[in-house]
Image (cartoon, rainbow, N blue to C red):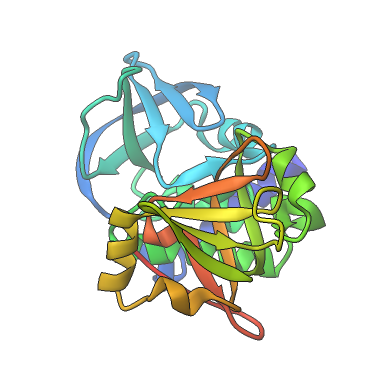
Amino acid sequence: MTRLLHLIVAFLLIAGHSAFATPCQFETQGDGRVAGIVDARSVRLDDGREIRLTGIESTATTKQALISLLVGRDVLLRGTDDTPDRYGRQGAFIFIGENDTSVQAALLAQGDAIASAEITDKTCAAALMASEAEARRQKKGNWADPSAIKNAESPDDILAGIGRFMVVEGKVLSVRQAGAMTYLNFGRNWTRGFAVTISKRVGATFEGAGIALKSLENRRIRVRGWVEGNAGPRIELRLLGQIELLGASEPTGVRP
């Protein structure tokens, strides 16, 4: 009961804040009542539709938070595309009743989810990242654990999470080109250390946004994505929103 009250209070507080009141108000894609929670990112409506929450990745507490917030509630779906994925799931932002704050924003603000960086709408993406940043600042939920953000200087800790979505921080020691791929190396041992990979196509997107990849050398950055790799851990950058430039204190994000 205490957990549920905390979630409801957080949701109402965010709803009253203008910074979160208008973003992610995409076209309405339908409505329904939540019959159950399929997994940490999917819910099933009473008409059988399965809805995948866009814009977030799950943490250990996401599923329970969704159960507390959504089961038995009437919801509105918003998004840019209601085409089901290959598993038949419709991606959407979920809003409870007439509330103009998405469930995704509420989860992020409570520390019960991680921003995925998949949203290309700048206003919506910025609002989601701001929700997460505030939860990090207050060490809420997932961010109460010091290991929630991995240290790029500890590649074994990152490699242990292979196949998982992770947030990693560290200093880029070198930027190297190999064929059509650019590597941001965080370790001096290129084969064992943590690295971020960026394809030529994505690199061109960075350049178009005024970010020269070579300029990231000796900069502290935060990256997020799925951990891959055999020897050293890797995260492939596919979207601008996966990386943030870190200053002395708060980051200045590179947005899609």
